[in-house]
Image (cartoon, helix red, strand yellow):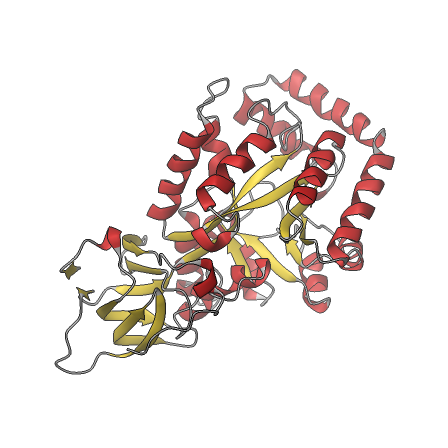
Length: 408
């Protein structure tokens, strides 16, 4: 890369030249991308003899990655058990990790629940403190600044449901993205309770007897909260059908799970655990999100369906980073190299596909009129290497099309 201004301070108007641009339907060699007012004004062949502000020297240019489910913030908040750090610091640290991975729009998974996915107390900070800090960084509180919230709600946690209701009431003009989940063992991601026992032993340092006792106690407690679960799902359905929330169903395992999600107004099947659930989601018109770490590894860490298998079957619309930010681009590249999809299709899984999941129409592809969120990377090695992340500083008004871009 070479240019006359630092890439970290990309201006509203510039020209990026001599890159291999991954467009929605093809890879364009020796491309020029013209940016005006923070929008892509032109993406086409680099005219002979034409100059540019930033010379890509043959590197690949991708749309900025969009991540609809990132747990990076949760990991930054508690880098070690019992060692919490300030929310603002954790958020900045998480954003730096995401940016280094080429992610320019991230939905941080914030837990509106009192227990972790394996049933252990989450503790502080609470969802209110975390969302307030994210809103402050995002400015308007939506994805215009590249920072947004995936409201993860445990349908068996009364306090979490109440906190979500308060947030919805406090933002009457905003459509919140909500993912409902139920991680109690014996269903969904932990359909085999043994997978949770293994996680408690390896990830939480429990002994085998304590892990087994914890899983059994949690399964018993699950059955005591069936009424709460049913009421929570009914309420989420009301909100989804009214257009107040965009609803994800987390870890659907069966065709019945998908049918129930569609009936309550759900838009996205997030991390389906079986190919049957993914097929049903496709037939019902739901967006299907799979885990990038699963696709990168070639298998699920919990013994569920392989994301690569789902991609090969044409059943995946988007890949989310989940617990590993760097997995998005690496997984997309792996899928293309395996011949499971073309490179433009693979990049679509981490660009335009995630945009469909959350209802964004202004980014995710190198197309005239989209936000100029661009990533320059080397994809020739075994693993991708991000060189530059050029994020648009466009205001939300311009991003939604109310301020048309100037011509090149």
